[in-house]
Image 1 (cartoon, rainbow, N blue to C red):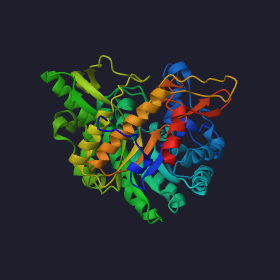
Image 2 (cartoon, rainbow, N blue to C red):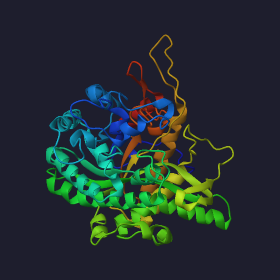
Image 3 (cartoon, one colour):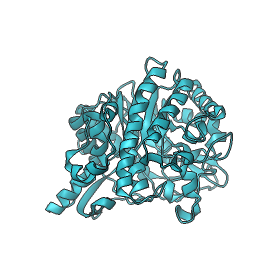
Length: 453
């Protein structure tokens, strides 16, 4: 940020700030058919020809299921006090509900215990997109029984881990599950239906609403906290036209407000009511459950959106503007930390959350492993600069009153990047997939130095 003259320091943030990194089960664990795990929609989707780049799957991924102790030792070396991971629903309930697979719970118990033994607080996400295929076969998020099944799943996990987990996150990025999975079809389950996307939106939020009291009831840590993580973008008109303004409103509402309004205000946004109301399967009491108080809101942020024109409302398609001379990541996302600051200010002003955790923020760049004659290395100055700029943006928002109390860099490891397969690397730790070697990138060492103060 312009007004920052001295290097940013850990001491600029509150002493009890959660500093860490984040991962997701299907992206890193592998072991897709071990110890009683059932199939997820991502197993099905990634094994369907043409759905992922180069036909890549998460069958092995980073083999974290077998290497978690090595990975946690590396987290400790880098100085994290917190770690956000996700639990694979199909490991716990292979059929989505019903009989609990104790071996699945055993794995996460070992993971959590190892984290705590290394001085790292666990933040567990219950759903990071890997719906049991058995539930999808019956309609998945389009149907009301899936939130009810999620309530059972949340109960099973929190009964086992409710005495140890510090942070509980019900859902990760329901917008991606609902819209990228059900409207755009680029993610599992690969549908192309606006109606399905809106039905999934409500049932995802209802799943959150049903799970929250269960998680609180099963909690046995006095300092535990409970929330949800949303994907966000700061939407701005790409020019001065009315079309650009209308496109920015649409992007803001379908990325941010269609989830934040029900969670914080107990209603869906009026700006898009003409598009969504006819498809929303709301029943009596749903919105009250969804709007129960949150201890925190998790914010995942990567880029702003400069909207130019709506192309197809029911396909959620719109034109955007690229900025001449701006830097873009390998995902073709603009590097522009001011948008992050603006988003955090908007969330704080419009919704007044009790606490904000930055649950994901990071960037993919074309990393190259250099073996050389010394130690292997990955020089990634663009990622380091991305993180510096976004830390500064968060600090600026914090100083202006946004209650930011944690930051989880995405991602700990290079991993299976969904439909992009293994072609995009977000990690601060490089993974050499053929050998499963972990090599800390320069950005990871910068983060380590930052955390040492």
